[in-house]
Length: 254
Image (cartoon, rainbow, N blue to C red; front, side):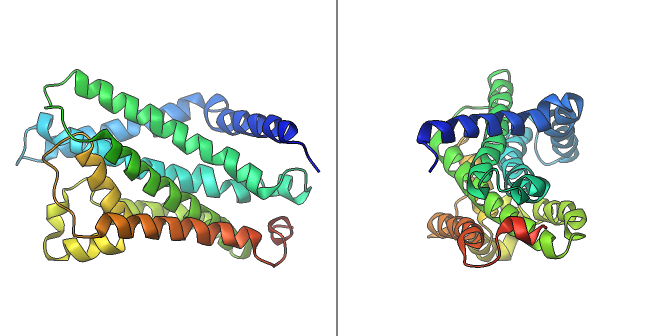
């Protein structure tokens, strides 16, 4: 039986290795994909919108974009680590749960960086401050839980269909299009209420906007509670696939 102190030591090493694999080994790539490219997309979409001034438009896109990036990073760098590090799992050196816990810290850390950049930009702008920051944290919890759960499920599916790993970026891009990140929630018009009840990210992005502005749009009744339940269910489903009585995850990738 491994002692808690040894487990924490291994966890610290895994967290350090996870950050090193993403940031230290490719700092230019991390800077481009995590900071420069999202900033360029936000600037481009904000200036295309003729119905609102850029100063009033970009914060809503930026804060919603940070939540979607947390979701996407939780899939790519969180749950999919079980596929990326399948050789390590095959050797049965590190439990899948411990590796997953270490990997989950990476998207959360990146989320903190993105939030810091957005809030620094807000301080330097004339955007009226308001909203409840706790709503942004709740939105982040939804995005992280659903992304991590879907990442685990994606890694299991990739074990049976390796080509799925190549299609995963397309599914994530589709989730960006189907989630009101680059456009307001009101653009969904008649399907807004139904889509908010079906897509947890729809609720998460609007909650994030409510975290920086008191002028966010109203969500349907029970939408927040249902989104929390759906996000938790997705995460539990993914975790269940690791604990269910079946061939071990390492053997699935042998």
